[in-house]
Image (cartoon, rainbow, N blue to C red; front, side):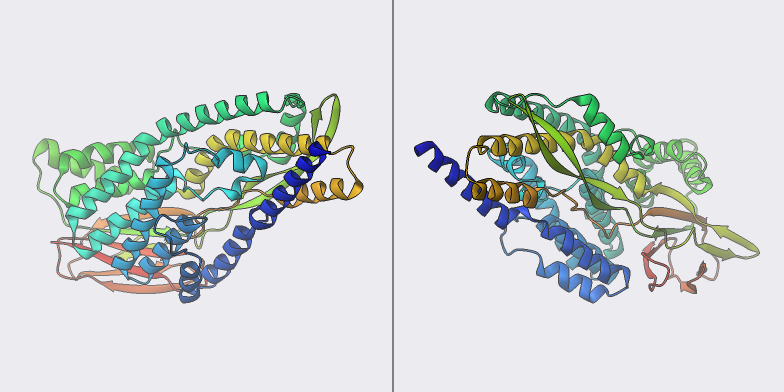
Length: 458
């Protein structure tokens, strides 16, 4: 009788956890934000993001995610100090989450329910892009000292990413071993059957174009460009050499590298240039994929549904933009694809995501098996708990672009740059009296109004 009571209490507690945490409100919230963002309703997108941020200083739930989105919108509205404040908050919480990652209960909670019960910790590319955006904001504010700090942080995040990832893999494997010992009734899942399910449901996973490790070529290029404009030619040369190696078919990046090489190694005089940076389109979103998996428990098979995230591509606003320069028409060329950056991390993490999903399915199968002799009501409650709690983690920073592009040209004598966005608008940008300048253009969708920022250097 006592054993039955313990089981009933466990089911009840589990059901309460599910009601509180197990559904997937982040998915609906992200969809609402995307609706505002992709229709150009940036004030509503910002208001919605801010409403989702808790008042807790340490952050909880999806605070990192909503601070990143709020930082993007305020940057688009040219409220640069507020943008940096949101990115600072997001970065502080990401750093804190990383430091607290090993605390007891996080993996247990996600194993029993789903990954959504754990606070959104931020992806490696989240941290890198937050630092890059802060660097750009400080450049526009004229604070090169703090811009330097942010670009150095972005590069350091890339350097440490693989080490951090390997630690996460080791930690998860220890959790798996511990759970396998605890779940004495559960047998290992037949990998061949599971591989078949993954292959059938994720046909594009092996075809993803990915970068080595966690490198974001846009971060390298913008850091290299900043250090050149700040007069640190040696550091700029190293970064632009890497950028040219990753983008050997981009004539503008190769020209930047050759220019800085001439300055650093041959004492040539710096030129006077304009760079047009184009932040184009929409990054992928995560969608939920659900399919059944038979879990062996004490010689029987318990059929469990598992849920995993899947990347769904979204569109570019345009193929490129153009600049009219005298008789020439210059077309922007790609620096990097954020699709590819995100696919790199998704593919690297997929094994861990899959392992946690199997652990969760196994725990739920063992729960159902342990209640096989209980009343239909108890078994029904357990089944409802399993079904409701099976959701994929689809949280991600969705206001990032599909790709980044660049045009590099000599500074026009009249300080005017004629930019054409095919299908959208023509714009004449009048530059201040400066030696070098960056014109930063952002266009999420073709029908939205482009955002133009000017960063000038004496």
